Image (cartoon, rainbow, N blue to C red; front, side, top):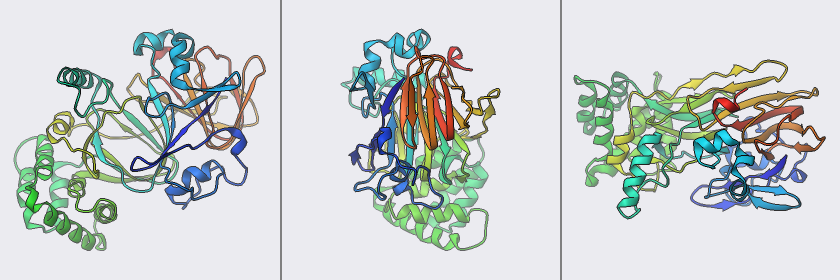
Length: 424
């Protein structure tokens, strides 16, 4: 078994180590505290002084080249990327190598969003491969960083505010119309007219391609109207309120208007949201465990200072794609484990409530990244080797490590592949 070190990444490209070596954890903290601001979540989770000296928004656990985790083996620390590259079949297993070409197919994060992240959408595998290949043949410049898809799963460790998929045409029309903004009447007419769900992408196009000279007046009028409606009773008061709060971080951003086309909701602690290819979404505020395919491909629609490639965004976006809350299913006792099933091969997320009785770790095969989010865990190998994890600490288990048991108290998340050979 191999102790791992995650990487902390803050907003606006601020980066810093968020060490997960077990010696740094204390019993004083070790959980995401109710009501604590997300900006303090990673420090509190790991038992460090909160708030931290610099911004921390993400704790990365994986081999992604932009932030590979460190793995301590035989007295020295190497990147997980290097470890996997040295012996892919031992680390990942033959099935994983055959399917994904010797690459760890997932990236696990603890996400602490203290301010809204960009509205974005991700391609499927076929779209990503074709677009990246074409981009490479044209000189390599473009919105794609690789040829992989990027489905995502978000598990809420605290109440988590999100924008998840499109509203129905009728609801989107009603939300925009209630603003009373004359400029938006043509967009409302698009949604009210005859046709199918492509009217939603037509409305999104109209907003994102709004004439440059009129963008700031439009956004400011929408924010002002939203502030008024947020204080009035109605089914969409929270969505209008979200526009006002997001405007504090993304001034005069067209994404503020576009967000009203999307379903606004707050995930309860313990809920999980699945983002498939083509589904428009944004993480607004909260703390969660995020599991995704190991890709950087994201087409943005707003709430960002990065490029918004409107034609490519609209080509990838599918207004019919739902961004659903998924319910876990139980893995057979005595594991006390739940699995969050997603229709992808790149990843599966497992959540185990630990007890003093040692039980088999789920899943038992394939590459696995294990992170403790509360309490304390002890992983024991068949040879008696023990790895102890405190909150915020993680370890990497290669496919060759079988027969692992786990015991302790608190909560453990395990990321594994979605391949049939690696499922319990």
